[in-house]
Image (cartoon, rainbow, N blue to C red):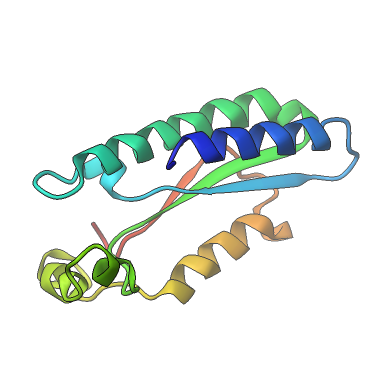
Length: 136
């Protein structure tokens, strides 16, 4: 799901947006796990997110001529309900000590990065993975 759905969505967006006069943007959501491998916790998840980052970079290069920008945001540990749904509600607090900023991120901090990539302030950005990780 971490790769198949984005592949299908990107393909459909590219099909619809090719030939447009205005810039279009795709922002995929990756994870810092793509770079850390997430040993002992989420290795398969990390591998799927690494593949998503490769998809992002490849599509950015393929679609640039059509004014379609493709980027990704790679969050670190974010304080959301995903940890509770995975069976460990205190995970964000547990791993905070190894985050240089000493705290998990907030969903709004990820939304701000996505918003920037979609904005007119990011018109020269494509094929980039923005790490929003608290320094990891």
